[in-house]
Image 1 (spheres, rainbow, N blue to C red):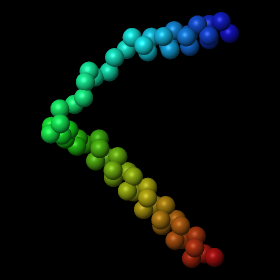
Image 2: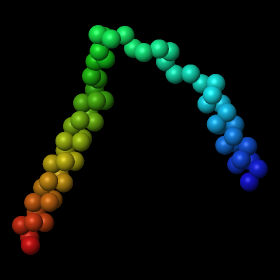
Image 3: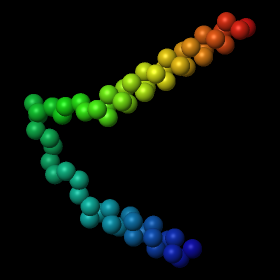
Length: 62
């Protein structure tokens, strides 16, 4: 139990020292869409289409 408490407190205290990106990004300089975003969008669209097909199939069976 002491080890768990010590590791959690160490983790929480170490986050105070960690810094992300300093400042706000420059406006007018958009980030390009990379291949990973295309894969995520395609996967989401495929999932939605599968859910809609399953819903239609269940409604027609009743």
